[in-house]
Length: 327
Length: 278
Image (cartoon, rainbow over all chains, first blue to last red; front, side, top):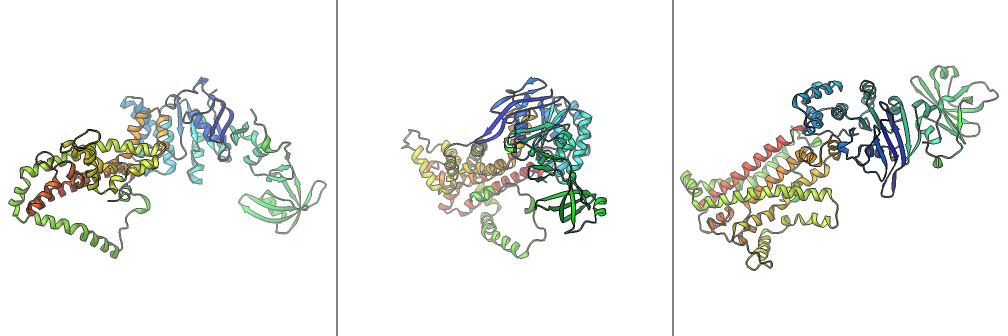
């Protein structure tokens, strides 16, 4: 196992950041710690890195206990949300930092730094200062800096959180390719479910310092363990106790045994998808996702009466507050 | 000199970049005011110093007593600044990074040497370390007393220059350094200190300039013994009292030149220290 956190707990005053959390990241995998802010995901990552002292629990990296090992000696590469660039050093010096601390030979440092800068596509920028780089470039530099010391594991704390949407999208695709290339065991912390689904083999979904569900992106989407998971991992409509994804709602012009009458309140074209807001006969509101062909065939207009059939839906027996964290 | 000007002495960035066009009226007011308050009096001193011609000027500044006082002033100031750089950094660090009871009180006390009239400071020092010292510690009329008085009045400069920079320093940088294998000492020397350097330098420069011209706090405790404990400002005062206005002006000009040189040198160093911000 690449990384194991066992029964980790951490409090900040009265706030319980981590409540007996156990997480594993298999060797070579990219595991996402996903959750809303305040769910404890960043704290867990910092505990693994040794940057935060846990109140209880144990940390193993490649089955070696690191619980009491200082951060300098844990063999982790850490990437921060706001880059944490050494602003008084050039790109070259930033990346070379860990190697200089390890007193490597100059020629070796030179070679390694240039290799890494090539890997992160910054080789032409080695003499610049961080202030002269864009956010995306700074974060790639930070990644090269973390990789320079050949860490056993890579920990990324919201690495794209400070970047704008387009750069974020580019860097995500780039990071996925990079991970396939270097195959270092990685944990990524993010609050963005799309980012987690796009990048991770495994998602650990956290909420209020506990784990709600662990599984592949598909697992979490198809078989959410509870209401919270279903709501966090994708859009959802709630009708009484029933939860249904907007794309599992079929709209038809004809009544049949399993349909309910509804009125179209509003509809929005979003390119390939059309979002239709509806009011059911009993007054409940919901929205459906249909393709633009379907929308065209239905001849949608405001106030039109249609018939909806709820497809694949779920009922969770226990309310989310009491949900038991899955191992 | 107020505390605020010190705090603003750190490098400006972002939207405060100078406007090349400027507003002619406000520029005129600024330059006019600066001339009236600073440049004209300085020019008058320079003009006054040359009243005896170049020969008179040279004679005035090569007076052995004048030279001795200048030498003492400069050496004492350098010594005081060197100590301030270390202790000032330490105090600023404790005030920003540690939390302890009475911290805000300590923080307020740092400004006391600014607020206190220097002659009062001199009086206090004399009472504490003079012939009637309650601790039996009599350093009055010695060279140690010169350093003591200068240390007292220049304490806030480095502390107040570093504090805001340290407050805004990105803590993630330190964690990144640690996660890359650097010890706490290595992190301080390689990551924190280089980022504090511009602030330390500007604090040191202001402290030095203040120290070179200090009068009130030294005049009582040092006893002003020529060739022994007499600093330049007190020598100048003596010359004025003795009706040698030209001699006083000549030494003043020399002090002025030294202060300017130091400020200029420090601002060059500062530009170098912040080269990565541009």
